[in-house]
Image (cartoon, rainbow, N blue to C red; front, top):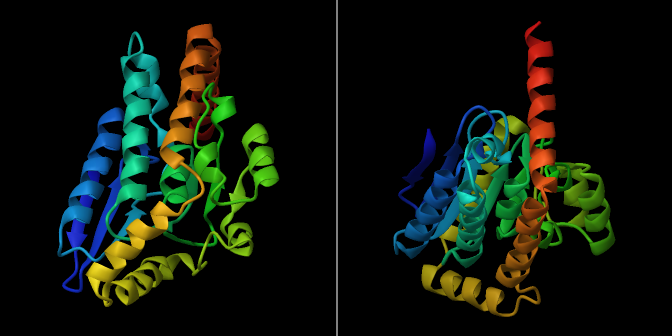
Length: 256
């Protein structure tokens, strides 16, 4: 359980998220992911990186239960800083990052995927920011990199999901291979990039980031300030507990 890393002989490093049951990362997990991304990107033997996940879905965001069971704001601040570090590590990774997405991609998952260089997703993949229903704000910065402005606002306010096929139509998802072919498809794209001169690709990544019109680090940090404000008002606490109470009820219903 955690973040697993492996590398092929051709220079493709694969990072796998594995936090059962739904890949909702605890504070430690976000920092662990950030460090794994930085370490892989700084290794000259890595030419390209594939970010994927085991389990039912790519990522369910932060571990809300951890925040609720921790007194004070330590877990909240930790989650904010951990997400910031992980999202930034994807964006700032010295080599291209390919996100390979299956199942659900929620909250913090959008932050990871939105900052990736290439996105592949299986037909069962769905992407959503249910933040407003959890008493939080954030990752609109990254959702705006996947869809046009007005659609981003609609998805953000409603918490509705968008499918891999729909994102493919917008051009933000490169390919939508069958679920059983997703990993191979991601590796095919990765191998094509890895075969090129890594000095050129690394320079290309830095150059593309340098001309990016969106200051992703600043805008995401700005969003996070409102999340903390919602916690001070008490609105976030109510929303998180309501979500957990409803989640527990649905789980009990399934068990019956």
